[in-house]
Length: 98
Image (cartoon, rainbow, N blue to C red):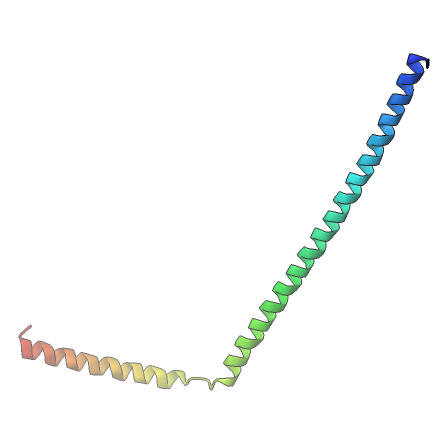
């Protein structure tokens, strides 16, 4: 029969080796998953950036191809509409006694 102290030593040594192997496997798996996660996040960020830039270019193209509105003309038209509405409102009040 093997000496119990020697047996306990070998059990402890074997336990440490198995734990070390499993720890190495777990660490390798974790680092692999971390690398994969990092790569996926970088790809998502790249796709997001591309989408933002595509929409930016699309909106810029829309603005640059549309003729710029004449601000003064727009203001004059709005003033004319306001004056017309005021006249119609005054006429309505006169006819209905308000």
